[in-house]
Length: 573
Ligand code: SRM
Ligand code: SF4
Image 1 (cartoon, rainbow, N blue to C red):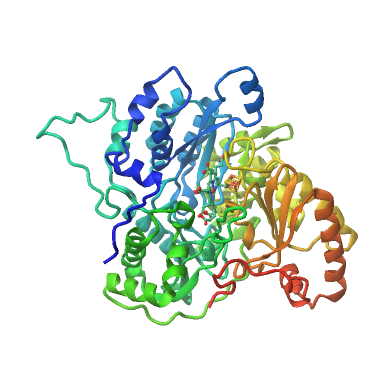
Image 2: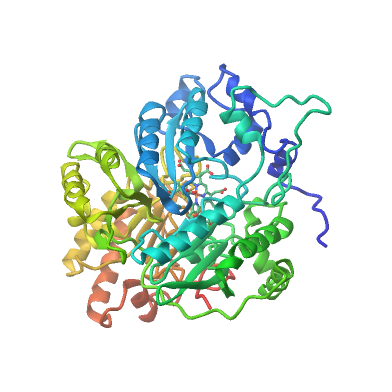
């Protein structure tokens, strides 16, 4: 049995005294003297699905004018497997316009984010999200996060089955605290704690202090690795026999985040530990999650993810403890093959005769701009769509399960609102992803979402000069090393270090099965462009037929002097 930790991190203490995530949130919300929450509540709010932020563009000016920061909130709505109904879309669109900054943000985990919500509008917004039968609980915090599942239902029955399992796991692992309902959904205010009459709260799976850190899961349906299954604490790779689901290869211990100048933190690829049947998925998830609950590091949050538990204790220890909890062992992993970790655009027919339209949404931001009225266009589409809307793990959208007779109408709306950008965009742009970064993210050290589109334009010019204009290369940017756009799984990864400064990572596999390596530190745009231009030149003259850029850089020795990240494996078993 593990000894109790004596040196718990401050967040552990906040959770312990929170009374199942209540803290003083009700009082914080009622306090109109400030736009902020009380300090402890800024940690607890995450479990309820929202973050306190301030507009960083205005920070300095407000400081000079002796004003408190421009406090505002980001709300994240969970969408298990990324599937929402047109009705849910319309509700989110309405909340974005009523109480947020008039944009919707699709995340790298198939969820929605609303930015710029004021404290006074939090309750209305969260309640409206729940009215649409989506929710925000466990969208953030030390719990199981939004469960991902491959987005394109081309093998319709198989995808439906996998998606149903993703939803089932998501509900199984959702916290049970009644605080969420009490604070956001009831009109009666906080629960009355009268001795003898109080309803006791309980978290059968999590216990009163929840997990040591966030926990992430994904279901991949080969040949697509759109979910980046190796980036997850726990992953399921669907194995099908003639499009009938046989079960899943189980992966454990993936994660992207690292901290600048702290070599004890690193991105790590998950490892495959065996094969389970569909009916074992809930038990496997519970065994891994509770193992991490009991053995994850609660003293140091930078060292609290499952990847470190596994590296510290070894995979053999992990397997033995996991099997003890499962009361069973996994079968041998089965062969599978991934083609890529990107999205597909345009129309595709599913094997049930329904159609799916992949739409490119640059960095997941849905807004109205002249000539590109994406927010309004998607509203009009949602009003008419007979299928469903899928958020992809690469911040894009699929209008799914569209009857053939509706295709022409949808096409007309897509064209009229400039949502057909995927037809002209280069493969580089279609394989690009940036995290939110500035001005809302409190951890950003450099621009990301606001800058990548420009930089991609310049890299496109360089690639075109080498005749590579139609080459698909994955490129991802983040404003800091936390890795929210999974930059360590991109052939070109740019990780923010300071204003205008990025570490350049190169050489990940096109299918998301190999991490990249740090090629240069602290480079500015001109260096990035020069370095890439030279490498594109070499690639064009020396590549083998069909070889991807990342594979080429590794084979040709450009990355020989660049260490693979961390002690974790950089190639899956
Ligand atoms: Fe993330 C923290 C945005 C996916 C690793 N992430 C944050 C915060 C909440 C900043 C904060 O703590 O104050 C960012 C809010 C920015 C804003 O203004 O909206 C933020 N993360 C995002 C999103 C919105 C990026 C995007 O552009 O889409 C993604 C929301 C996903 C969702 O719907 O749940 C997002 N974050 C990820 C991913 C990718 C993934 O999960 O597949 C990762 C890397 C995978 C992983 O977890 O290892 C990721 N985010 C982090 C970390 C580092 C965690 C670590 O283990 O070290 C932080 C920092 C932290 O937790 O302390 C972080
Ligand atoms: Fe913020 Fe860093 Fe995540 Fe980007 S990678 S959203 S800058 S925490």
